[in-house]
Length: 127
Image (tube, rainbow, N blue to C red; front, top):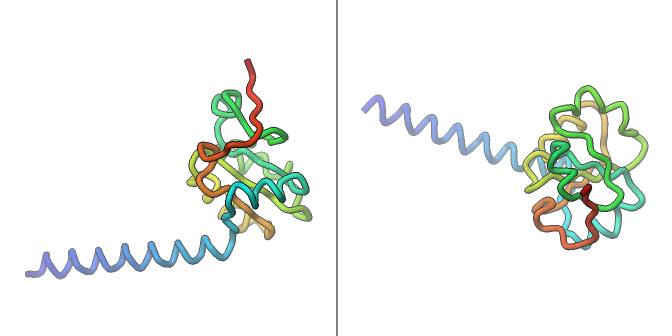
């Protein structure tokens, strides 16, 4: 019986944490469709947070590659006074990057819904 109560407490804690994280994420970064992303990214800093090999395989035209693994060391390359548009392969890393940047004082953060795999616009790749 005690193990059942413990399991229920753990499940409830996970659910509460998930709901909190979901609403926190909604508050700090705007997740937009491809059309909305395309309409705004030319007036912003477009950052691809995927690793260099993924970036070389294809990226949105005009994007700079600052991998999530290097974000802490390279965040001084991102201006705080301009909007920041982020994307990764699926949206997970760009969410983490947005959380990190928000903690460092960046406020105008937008990410591509579904990430690069949902992108149908112009793409550049190294050959």
